[in-house]
Image 1 (cartoon, rainbow, N blue to C red):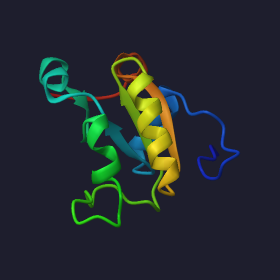
Image 2 (image 1 turned 120 degrees about the vertical axis):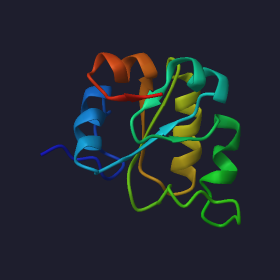
Image 3 (image 1 turned 60 degrees about the horizontal axis):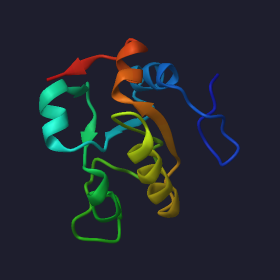
Image 4 (image 1 turned 90 degrees about the vertical axis):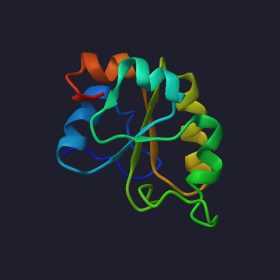
Length: 117
């Protein structure tokens, strides 16, 4: 069984995320801008929050907290190639989330992840 909990968890790949998402064990978070998502679509079922808004929208202590992000459920973050996902992953970790940077949207697609437009 793939362990996704704790600080010693291995780095999750996009393929791992595809499998975990199919079982409902993670929340997918797309941190690209709206125009990027409009141009390519996003992972099926992903929450979309631009990276600049993650500290506000993911923080359960703020009134703007997006309830689709639950600190008790692991989050797999992606962007276009992985840089912004890394920033979001670090912000989520500081707020107590178990968060994983799974790279870019292309990694999700290449791993067989479903896309919604």
